[in-house]
Length: 211
Image 1 (cartoon, rainbow, N blue to C red):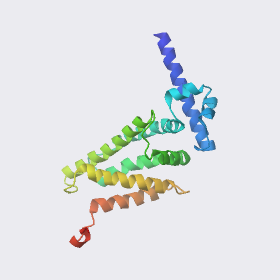
Image 2: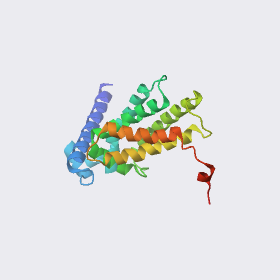
Image 3: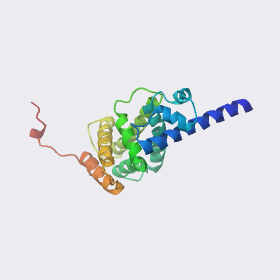
Image 4: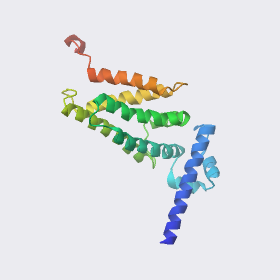
């Protein structure tokens, strides 16, 4: 038991050193200019050890990001209140994610860029699961709003939540591209966009004609 415990402790120590080394180098040199070999050297481990935890440099980036994103989901769920409006609950969930990405903008910009079509690597499944959890949290909030009569729609909660999720994904990237990250300005713009969805555009019949 002691031998097994020591082995696990050594693994955890190496993983922490690798994550810290990658984090420091990505911030100081930038993601593109950092090499996996440099990360291994900074962590004091061999290249083979790095590849135990991440297959590529991009996987190392998501090894760092995934921990924070998973915590965002946990925190977000704890802030949802049954007595709050649908809009209030949506905003408190998405605010938590904006706050996380704003902690290290340089790292976040690299991560969001690499998120596109990110399907391979050890950390891909974790990332996709976390994104799936956020979408399902939004679906749960939309469904609850429908059941309580806060909103009415003939569309399924999944589709409505996908619209909200898409707005969040695009606007987060626009907001992070700014040199001055004002969380309140970002939240105000995001809120107005979500309100467009919740209020609807009450279109005239001619607005929906397709060729």
